[in-house]
Image 1 (cartoon, one colour):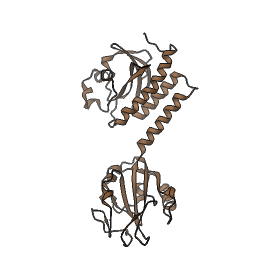
Image 2: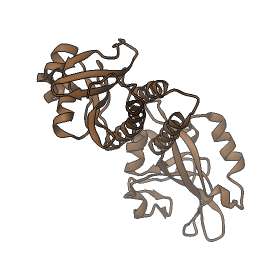
Image 3: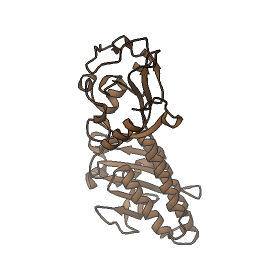
Image 4: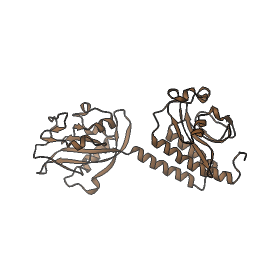
Length: 313
């Protein structure tokens, strides 16, 4: 937790190592503002020894701990790296905080062991005399936002790299998509009538040659073509896909696909899949795959203009 912001409390004694804390967030004579309880961001309060005395429901949800589990524990146990905690204590707990101390990025560790990046703002809880009673912090998870920013940067870097040929760019984008969507395979298809033709394939499992064809009805992409919209499924056996012929033929559990537009015309699909289930996709994933499709559409437009696509008009 940082020390930049500050809450003024009534004239009380400092919050002790074993404070009288109620479920209502009373810290001695200091009561946690009701505003903190209902904030969508995580809020934590600790005493002068940096032992946790209160967290709000959003904190419990974000970190995976209950208030009962955390009460009395040191805040250092929440940090992803012990040396970062030490640095925070030495550099951000002076009596006169600098403006740069008001808010900072730091990685924490969830109960599951997974680490995540946050924007943290906080500071000391002081009485009118300036005595420090404890500390608080407001923590916002920015790991997904930062991941999207980095992904867009990498997409731009690939597409603007003049040293890469078009084929290499599409393969690099498919590889990047597999990593982002946590799948084993990525495919770019050309669809005409009921014929599904593989143009590009990146896979850790199987190599599908360019020009390989399938019946469109035997692919999940048939549903994408029908709806003309992105579609995602994280567990086919628990969805309507369980009765799809593609599931019978390929046993693909995870799928996310989107229509592929080239030169303003519906061309085919971009999709990522895996035989293993994954955690549910989020709305942001459907927007992100449309971004991937836009980049690939640009590359296919170039290939089409230079007669590099193995398709028939």
